[in-house]
Amino acid sequence: MDRRIVILFVTIFIDLLGFGIIIPILPNLAKELVEGKAIAQSLNPDVAVGLVAAVFSVIQFLFAPIFGSISDRVGRRPIILGSILANALGYVIFGLAGSFMVLLVARIVSGFGSANISASQAYIADISKPEERAKKMGIIGAAFGLGFVFGPPIGGWLFHIGGREHGLEWVGFFTAALCLLNFVWAFFALPESNTEKSGVKRKPKDTFKGMIQAWSIDVIGELLLINFIYISAFSMMQINASVLWKERYELTPAEIGNIFGIIGVFSAIVQGALIGFFQKKLGLRKMLIIGSPIAGLGLAIIPLPSVEWFYPVQIIAILLLSLSNGLLMPSINSLVSLHSPAGSQGKMLGILQSMGSLARAVGPLLSGFLYAQYFALPYWAGGLLMVITLMLVLLLSKKLDVQKD
Image (cartoon, rainbow, N blue to C red; front, side):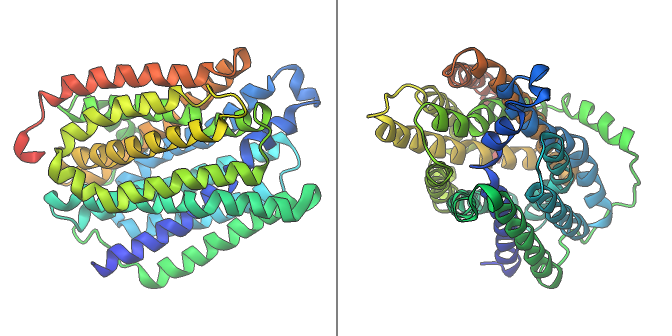
């Protein structure tokens, strides 16, 4: 395997491990910091869970396309390194969060530092042949999956051994240390991939004009909408599940972390080992078509089981969601890369990442509101959104060039 791919995989894995570590802690922490406080008079605790997830994603939405465009001009490496340092600072603040407002600041800083995903996708596109992109994009998905294999269980374990007094500090400071190790590794081992940097200087307003223009590009616009709806549906589960599992099924942070770890195991297997097989046997278009209803079914069944049937049903849901994510995300990323105008892969992938960030803001906010009405509504709404996604995918499939599939 290409040495640069190995280095990038390790870099993204360490970074996303830190993200995975806080997943079992963040939603319930946000709710606890609001409940019983004066802020609760104007902010529903369930909505607060969505808000703390949304603020991270809104910042990512604002900066990902800017960083994607900058990486076209100055290179991928400076963006990746800078974002890692920002994440380290964000996790230090997270470890010190004794109030809801400090927690919001921590997520804002980490949101600013989350641009490394779009830069990493552009890095993969720089060094890959068109026919290899789906498989190599799957490597990022595998790194993300492995971050969820080890991150959430580690987060739950760290919080447990730190106890109520110091658990948050253990989680935040340990994650910040991982980010610093990530920075050192990338600084010395990750070379620049963008050897033909654009000399065009883009202003922020030009970047957001480009986002609007991207929606009018044939195929790209449809993919942006499909990606937005899918990420919205998936993020409704991703943030709310910790609250659901704690309140309805009385799971501990460690148990919640273990479930997310299982999701990571299956996602890593699908995206890391099976994506090449899927692309060869199905093609990118069929991967989109098959993945959409599978995701909808997986989301819809999550809140259905009684306490006795919790684990069997959740395992089925996990298998479905892992398979659908492995089919949808690499194919969307690859199709955007393949249909991007010449010299604009970094910009288009940055826009894709940014629209995904906006979806991760919309999804949790909607989820928090729906959960406050009835615990199952976020998951059933997510299933409905995937039915809409399937309809859009079927329309798009008629446009895609078979030779580029």
